[in-house]
Length: 194
Ligand SMILES: Nc1ncnc2c1ncn2[C@@H]1O[C@H](COP(=O)(O)OP(=O)(O)OP(=O)(O)O)[C@@H](O)[C@H]1O
Ligand SMILES: [Mg+2]
Image (cartoon, rainbow, N blue to C red; front, side, top):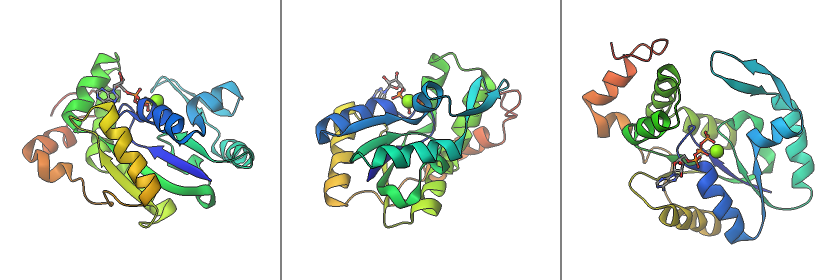
């Protein structure tokens, strides 16, 4: 079975998922790396500067890998993970302002920063996870202002005890107020506030 660590690009999936896999003593699978290394790509999105993964091929590969045992899977592409293999899905969340800083520091173009910040505010990944796996198997962890260790411990508790933040526990619209609307009304193509 698979433990899925999902979330908007930049929230800390890879940092956390690697450590969670190590602590559980199971394999770690990064879907983006897997797709590129195994040639499971459907094309290149030049506007976003990223490969588009072949989701069907990735699902087939994950089914194959899951036969070898439990694994921690790291991806923001929830639909590339076969729902029947997911024992628990943890969606990492990050304060959109912190996410904006991190993505800018990565050198992402303004349009890509804004697109991801908007997706985080609108719970895009969480909604996809709930739709694919159901509320029972889906949890969220707010990583804002927490150390990597703290986030890893929270994720491990969820994996072991199936207790923790349920979908809806994070609400950026409420937390950010007007600032959220400033992000949402900005022009994603230009990456500028309206
Ligand atoms: N809890 C944390 N506290 C501070 N910095 C963190 C924390 N978790 C991750 N980071 C930092 O944030 C950045 C993004 O983390 P990471 O690469 O793990 O994100 P990701 O979700 O895997 O992104 P992507 O979807 O693009 O692969 C890295 O520089 C990482 O060191
Ligand atoms: Mg990553």
